[in-house]
Length: 239
Image (tube, rainbow, N blue to C red; front, side, top):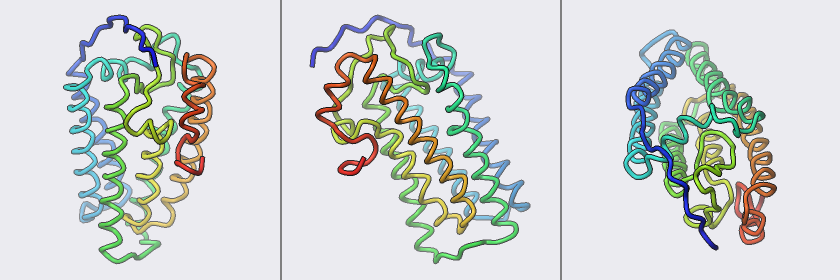
């Protein structure tokens, strides 16, 4: 596939903003979990919060080192004029509000439950899978220099189709592994009720994937041909 020459863009990253986002995210997550639980004596909450922070920081630091232009794009995409209006509505739901609801439910289930009772090895396995899937999702982000936080055709960056790495197997691996990482959490938190917001989130991701795929086929040169080679969006051999 012919690769267009990228138009130079700024790669300056506002480190104060990056650090502020990290601190806000971890305080929000931990605050919601433990306030909902009504106690800090909850090892599942502590392990999940600490490891989530480690994955978040590790993944973003690697991105800043390996692809600072992608990091800059992800931080600014929500304010770009060509960002799809529908995605500005979807992103807060799947990236903030529904995860917050899931943390609240997990905390309440600790306070009043738990509604399930899995053995420790099941919880640990679910936790490992959660962060393993999250790590693979980070790999997808590193392989795709156009991995934006919002859907837009990045003409200012010479947007082209990426078809190697996990993109050789599925068209939207970032969404796929985000979904996989969330669906195992009921087993970790011993919570049946957390499956409710997670199910809503999965539906949101699938809907967003559909809209993004249609946008890419209509507006990104070479993408429709790519769909003939890689036929499945989220799950190889299924859909």
